[in-house]
Length: 131
Image (cartoon, rainbow, N blue to C red; front, side):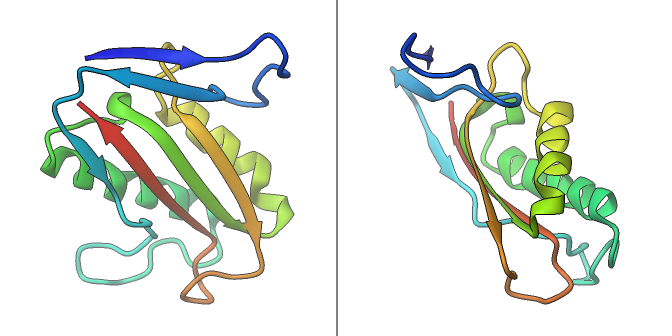
């Protein structure tokens, strides 16, 4: 698979660990993850009121979905991150910076919203991976 980052000279530098776009040639498989939240295997909410704990659980869940499909975070080409409240925008960028492949980051969208499906959720992440 050939993966090409798209960062036109006419655009600003990315604000965090991402690129403006990703082009893929010769893909063998595309994996679409549903939005992952901070639920553990038993459906318990991990990190109530703790953004960092929720973020790490979300990443654990996302990595499990990717692994089930034969992928890793390095295969993510597009990620959408939803956070509840502007105060979590930078912590979400930091979370991605800790987990995305810095040499080959995904295209990314960060959405600040009023709430998610459960009022205790502070972050949700969905991704598209290509292998």
